[in-house]
Length: 172
View (cartoon, rainbow, N blue to C red):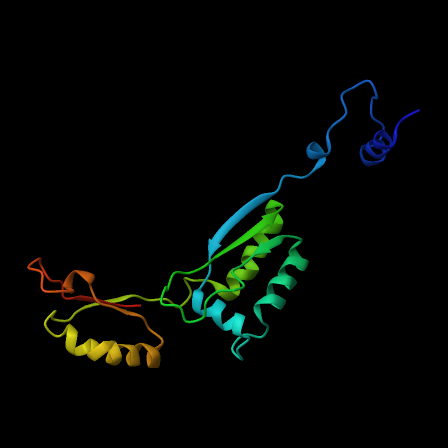
């Protein structure tokens, strides 16, 4: 008479040769993969805040994608809104290869970092940088807020060092 675990294995795999080695539960599980990728910080912040621009908030969106794709998704649900760091956050998806691909495609269709992103590099004399930036950075902060762009001045220009100064300003 077979024990309970043998009966379960038999029903899952059909008739097994009971003299052969029985597969373990781990051997019966499908192969899962884990994929990590970056998403657009600004779009995710808007989704977390539940702004009018996105149709659904982040919780509802990710739960829907998990249900449709049969995957497990981890996202930064407590992302600090408006943080000085402009690094794009990571999303992690775990599941079967095809399911992970489908979930990633759904997420990137809304939160892709590469859509509509342009970097403009221009030369502005380093002697004018302080005038453009303004006292306490107020001028440049106002411009960045109104345009939704990030403007980066070279760090090598800080202070009174005698090293070579750079004129290149990046607008992201």
